[in-house]
Image (cartoon, rainbow, N blue to C red; front, top):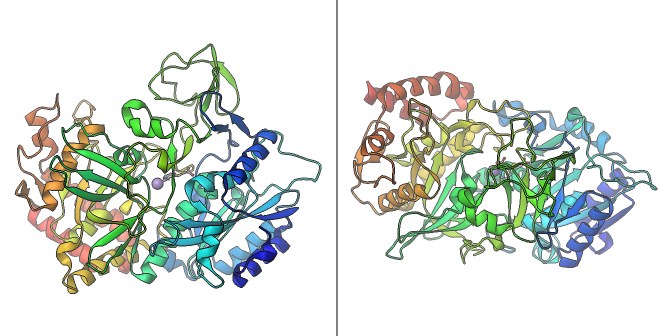
Length: 611
Ligand code: O2Y
Ligand code: MN
């Protein structure tokens, strides 16, 4: 479609302004069709950027520039009017100054390239909970990925009409081309990190991204819109935009519940969303693996949709053992980025569950190396980049729930928070109240992964609600928003319908550094306990920190002793005293008077009960 034909006057004007600023050679409004997808891929193959994979139908491998392999948190900016509105956990810049800086970068940035205008819906097209975004980009790789990750095309423009609301998203890789030139197999981006920007303007609900073509920096529907800008929209409109998986769980009696869960990177979030239960008779199905948007329905229950249409999963570590359903989801129609390429034309990565076939393999930088015999590589010599990704349609997941695209959403019974903690934090803990649950979300903490380019891996940081890099406003106010929604629901007489809140930790270690809990499918035992708690089953003991499983309430998995279970599910008083001091002095203190007093009250109450 031509820009001239756009019916929405505001959209047309916005695109025309971008064209004047960025001066592309051509402009095209994306229709989301299969033909368009194939054309993008052909363009990318011709430019030497995509390698067709012989072993997987309609699947391609990309290798990005080593400067462009992950989200860049240090260049992710919340440009609210004032710094305090962005809060202590975000990078802030003055919006007027930032727009001036970025406009200078955008000037002429698409010369020699095509501009693609992508109308996309986050959530089933037309759902009351969905939102529309329009992304302008000069990257056909981004267009192809957006086709998989969102719903793109004319149907979205039809819902938008001539005056509907949309989130405008500018994106450029920042690499203009001379008219005779091509990318010649070199991933185009701005290699200077100081010229990369992933900017959010919460006061005008706008996104401007420049310099990166990778993942969360470039597929603007995901972290930028569905979390950072959506968290602001959710605050302003009274709903929740969360970094949460959504799963459906069915017990042996056929009863169903839906649970959303927030886990920081490297805690097995995708694995949990697609879990194969070891508990006989239980079934888990997937609604979403990363983001949940939730609104209260007329019945007072909270309904969730998955705003995305695909998975942008971390490849290394994914295997038939860790996530069989993810492995099945990526057998065809999948884009792989920064994985190894085997001699037989397939992808390979560390911990895929087997060595690589043949004599040689090509690593993510394009270098030939001896094919690994096992699925491990020495640190720093990985075949696949640790943040290598697959982009696959969610509908290809064997355990996708039939209702995953229901525009009404699914009613949520429980929230689960969790982190990777070696000590103190029990296997599972239920909050005593909504505010106590918000407290649990606020103190979530975990180890860090390669998903964040610029933070040292291996250290522990607090990652409240797993939203630390994704909250579009002051995190203290965000905690307040959660408290307010609970209070409103209670005041309206729907308090009993609020989801129950739990905190899990699959990562406790014993004194020898061994994991005490086997994780993966065995986590179904914990989900089953939560399921029964939602129905009010008397399977818990009340403690200072929350409701913990009664001895024997969770049957130990094979190889886990009753003594280990007691440790996993017990209250570590000394550990919690240290934890409380750390929360008060290091974590909560940073929010100053923006930290809701209710959270300090929770902290005080736990401390008092522990003493
Ligand atoms: O590195 C990136 O750009 C991707 S980050 C990502 C992708 C999918 C799901 N979650 C995340 C994340 O960082 O939370
Ligand atoms: Mn995520």
